[in-house]
Image 1: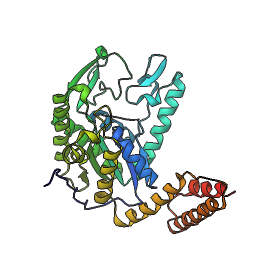
Image 2: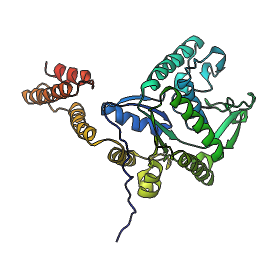
Image 3: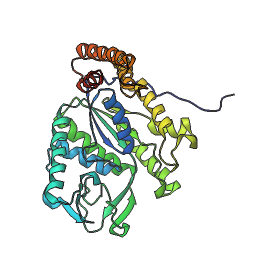
Image 4: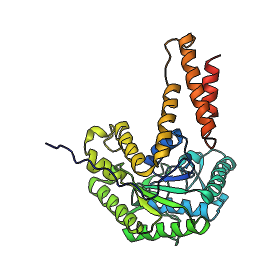
Length: 332
């Protein structure tokens, strides 16, 4: 008897290689996948604006990179003794206006440079709900949509659910802007499996449905792909034991399950083999030695030092300086 409907995503027609550059933008689920890619030595730039949830803010941020927009001083506001940006996560807030602006524009400059030569743009959409500032007049580029509410009271915002057509048009405009400066870039959309239950159970489902409908309207383009992270958690795993204590966020086991499916469907075979070797190096670094001063442990470090040097020689486009230094220092 079968108790679970497991499925595996179809392999992508074009797959990610270790020589590729990946720009990841979106929800906290983006950062989980981004960390795993970075740990396996992929060239990754993750959330230059910080974590973003709604498709309008995600699209606006990417358009800003493509159009080389610098964030101006008047875009900042002061609240709770911090200077913050309406288009950025709180990680960029600072008590000094000049420091906040400096942090934001350093990240912006790096993103502007990175997107020009990126091979992949991976976007994770979290919610179709937007919070619109009441004190900003509506403009065509949705300047009144908050990327982050910065713990400001909710009475300062209007909350509404975007319709799929709004989402589609915003993401299409973003695609056009990116393709203009990087015609060869490929785009992967995912919908975050994190359940936004603060919006309500029914509202969360309406939100996810709007995102899914809009995204699938874009996948007719040969360079636009969809990876079913949402479906893997909600329809395949389909069990609260795969969620954290808040019953909204996928737990460690669920994230690893989605990651394994992602690698199998999206990463090319040669890079998958290399990832296994890198994973072995990472495991050796995280190994807790019973006696770090013992000859046995030094021999263990030497073995992995030689393995790491061999990888560095064979794959010169990957940086193993940190790992080589770790094993070398440990042997002293």
